[in-house]
Amino acid sequence: MPRIFLCAVIALLGLANQVQAHATLDRAEPRVGNTVATAPHEVTLWFTEKLEPAFCRITVTNAAGERVDSGKTRVSGSQMSVPLRAGGPGTYRVNWRVLSVDTHTTEGNFTFQVGRQ
Ligand SMILES: [Cu+2]
Image 1 (cartoon, rainbow, N blue to C red):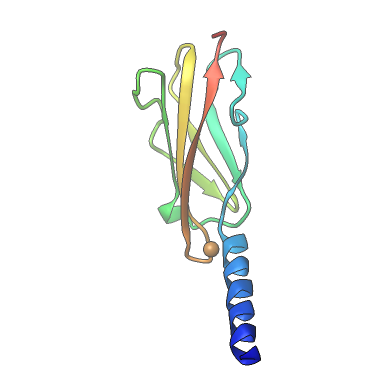
Image 2: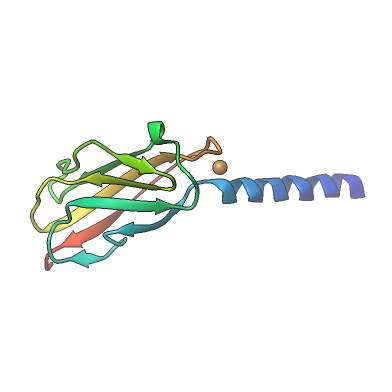
């Protein structure tokens, strides 16, 4: 019985390590949920792990749901960014998907506001 318990503990510790190793969003510019005066020229995201450039992508949509990113995500280390077309005020949604060097894929999204609401 103690042996089985030990295995369970080791398995849980292994799982915890794996979760920590995934690339999760550390911070963003514009900041998550923040309001900026004018539409930014690009969105930059920083992650907790190094990224595999070939499988990482940012897309950004405006309030009307139209894509406003250039489609050309650039990756450098644990950071990635994408240029934006000029846009008006409203809520912008940033969708991201990354493959970290530990081969795990993570994804998420957040919004920021442009102009006064
Ligand atoms: Cu992982």
